Length: 161
Image 1: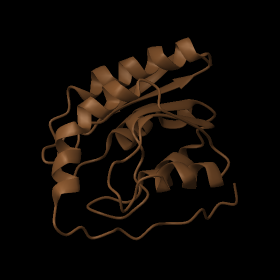
Image 2: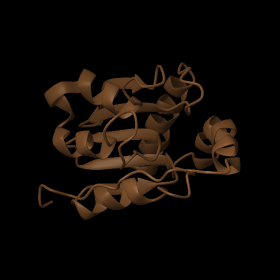
Image 3: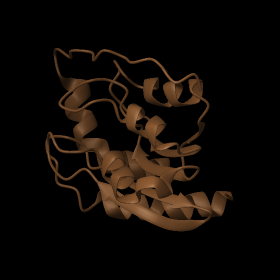
């Protein structure tokens, strides 16, 4: 995919993220593309519900295999109310993940992208980053101003890449 294509599909993911109302969690959108064509989209609808990546991958089904996942916020790699999104991304067989912005949580930032890279996924970070950060700005401010944060348990690659 070209840089133009990456910006185009990330713009779609950003648009989809604006539908999300998962407060106090961040608004996140995701789009699955295969062979340059739209396959599926998803967004984080509510607290405790599937994250955007999970919704998009579920909608894509087997068509996600070998494709590209565009997601506005770095996929989580820790257990919280839901399992790590990185597990689902690896299981879906996508070959490339394009991320708008890193997770601003100082306890987890970079771990989702690192796990995907370690497992052989091509990861690109920073496409339409300013717009992606704007979507999570309020959440990030609340997150970084908390007095106490409990870091999640970071998972490891189990499928061998």
